[in-house]
Image 1 (cartoon, helix red, strand yellow):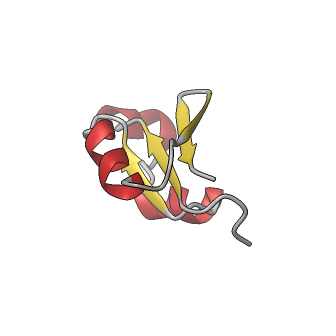
Image 2: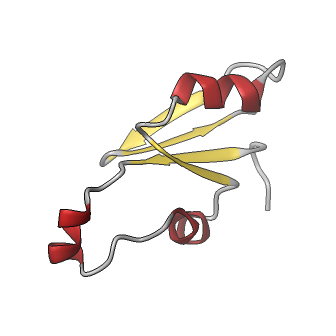
Length: 75
């Protein structure tokens, strides 16, 4: 079901040391399936470039931030 168009999820890139506590650092595909979004990127990637490429000419994206996870979508 598509309510707002494309959805992009930006997640923090965790260092390998975090695997000690998490047992496994999940790949991007895990977050795409879990949160049912169209695309997933790491926060340290060029956010402005990703947004410019994905939303060119389609209006202004809306931002939602909760617990270090940033979800971006457009109407």
